[in-house]
Image: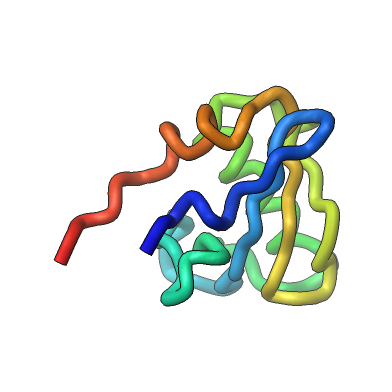
Amino acid sequence: MNPTMALRPHPEGCTLSLRVQPGARKSALLGPSAGGTQWRIAVTAPPVDGSANLSLLRLLASHFSLSRSSVRLLHGEHSRDKVVLLRGLTPEQAAALLPAIPSG
């Protein structure tokens, strides 16, 4: 499984496909989905009034050392499946910043 399959080039940087778990006990990047086409992320905020989306964008901005305005939700505002833009990062740069996945 290649966890970088969730990353795609974009004219402004790259996109990251996500499966989000709102209302979690702890916010964290969990790892790639079983097929590797999405990255699983948990956020503590509930899915109410966009608070989970805002929490997600803040978490990603912090994790990738980007300004909050450099992380934008492109698709999936009302879904657990989302696509975000990481402005200014290539897929290779973003992949290098994703958590290591233990083998086996």
